[in-house]
Image (cartoon, rainbow, N blue to C red; front, side, top):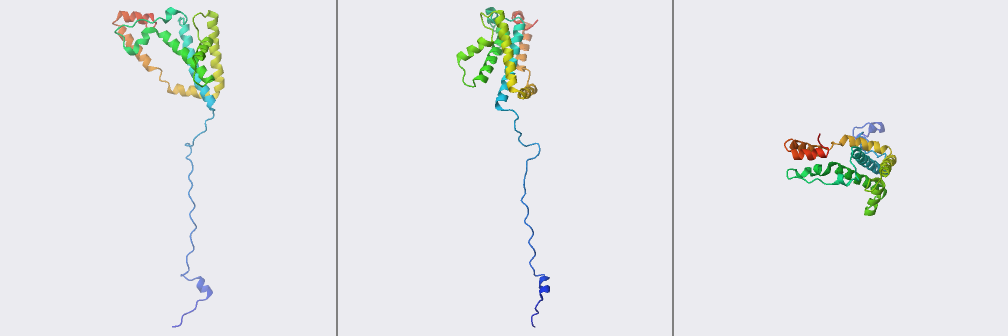
Length: 215
């Protein structure tokens, strides 16, 4: 049988025609989930450093002033004499009987001086630099009342200056500290143990009373 020749219209409608290709799928893109993107710190590194030093200086200055306002004289040799510890005193609590106020003052004075030096130099500190900070800000033997008052004001001005350098970074650092502060639980626990021991030990009670740690 002779083959039938398709017309052009019939050829275009023929089921043997290859199907049209489907469009290529679009490539998927992935973005950052809202709320998880890394935020740029609005403060500079110098502001953040100044904020940290400001907090240290504020606390150190407050501790020094509080101890001196309670009657402690940092330039009086008698106030810095260490009390002999008895065999009944636990090792971790020695400092309470040594001189609580002396320890608080000395630690605060050193922290204040180091904070000023670290911000100004940022390098290894020399003995001469440390001595100079003490001469400028910390009461020392031989200081007259007006010199002690002048150093107190100098510390206050240094704190204000450091806070000014930190700007709003100080507010953030202060908030972070308040949220993470544990209130110094280890020291409180040590003192409570000594108070309990003092109830049955008159000698220990007298020493704690002399240090102003109990009534």
